Length: 164
Image (cartoon, rainbow, N blue to C red; front, side):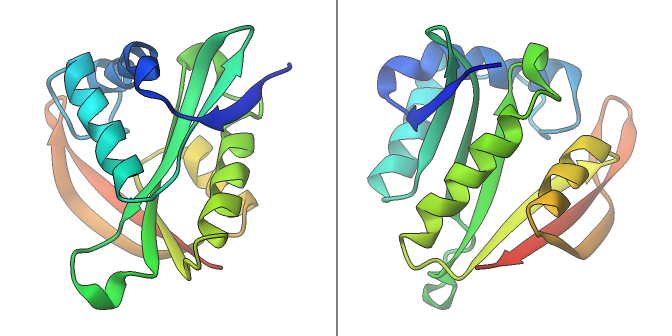
């Protein structure tokens, strides 16, 4: 399957919102429980980009099929060389290599910004996301038990880290 990756633009917010809200409604991948508006998504994109972090989108035949971004890990100054990564795909494109492509491009983008460490929080179980991150060299560094509650059940969260 052919796709291209580029920087996100504010005009992408409707597609980004549709992708994300699928996970809000159907998945534990996000702990948000209420769908967000395209204005809220636009604000998130703007905040990431204005802070000089990368937000990337994957396109196939003019349609956005996934996105990834890096954001500040923590607020304290000493964390300034660490980021947290996020990746979401249109559910029709899971398992086709798009997530891997997005994450590879994201890693290249954060390397160019002198980032030292990148973290990925994964709600568990999520074998596909764990496999994706471990394929890219991330290692599991933390496991928090029952820290989220969604769909009437407690959910664990693991953290994977890659030292760049």
